[in-house]
Picture 1 (cartoon, helix red, strand yellow):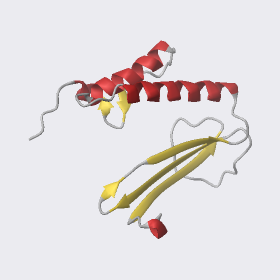
Picture 2 (picture 1 turned 135 degrees about the horizontal axis):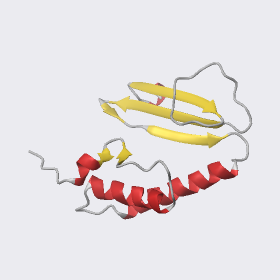
Picture 3 (picture 1 turned 180 degrees about the vertical axis):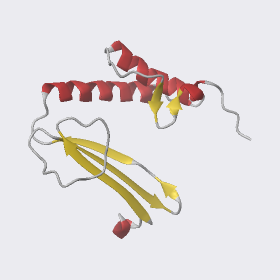
Picture 4 (picture 1 turned 60 degrees about the vertical axis):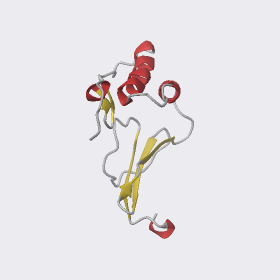
Length: 126
């Protein structure tokens, strides 16, 4: 990242058969059937971007493929909810509605990274 101009980069990698979240890297060897989670957060002139990727090591298990399809469907629902007057809460609600319709058992009242209940009200910028 630095060779491409980033001031700094925060990197996390972890792999296991079931990853609930990105955790600090360890000495565990990657195995067939693992899910590799990567989180790259380069900064440039004080601005940060978060790039997260999930990779199946070998063919993905049927459950993993189903979850991926759900996330992809939910992401597109969120993208389709974006327009000039959209509120972040409306976009988050579109995403979470897909998850709820698909029976996702981890549906909460927020979408993560700031898209949540507090965003369902109008924000007035000074």
